[in-house]
Structure formats: C-alpha cells, structure tokens
Length: 92
Image (cartoon, rainbow, N blue to C red):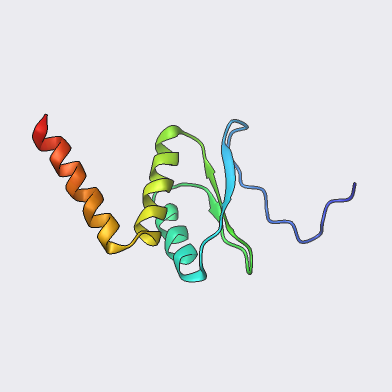
C-alpha cells in the first residue's frame, strides 16, 4: 500500500509515546498548539488538519487534557471545576 503524499510529519518521541489528533476549531487549535509548545509537548498543526500531539508521559497527557479543557469548556464549567478543587482541598 502506498503512503499518501500529504501525510503529516511524524512527531519525534519515544516509541511508547501516545500520538493522537485533536479536532478543535482553528482558534482553539492555535492556542492549544502554542501552549503545548511552551510546555515542551511535541505537537504539529498542519493547514486544514487536526492538531496532532504526542504524550510521552502521564504528566504530559494530563497537561494536554488541561490545556484543551481551558480552551473548550465554558467559563461556567471552568468555575465549577475550580470550586470543586477548592472544596476538596479545604475538606482534607
């Protein structure tokens, strides 16, 4: 089977890295891409392609989830999540 000529570049990382696409709108993808770059998480954002990220560690996976959540969740949901975090911290 022939490889397509328009395939995205392969993200460098260890063989155990989990690489997957994130289907976000363009603005969110751009914001997530830049934030992941500052966190040194391998990612690639091609033209008219989903953002591809590579999670090399459980910490990176949690950071990806957090960055995506801040871009896609409503302010109400983010506020509720923050309040739940504070309540858990206070109750311990």
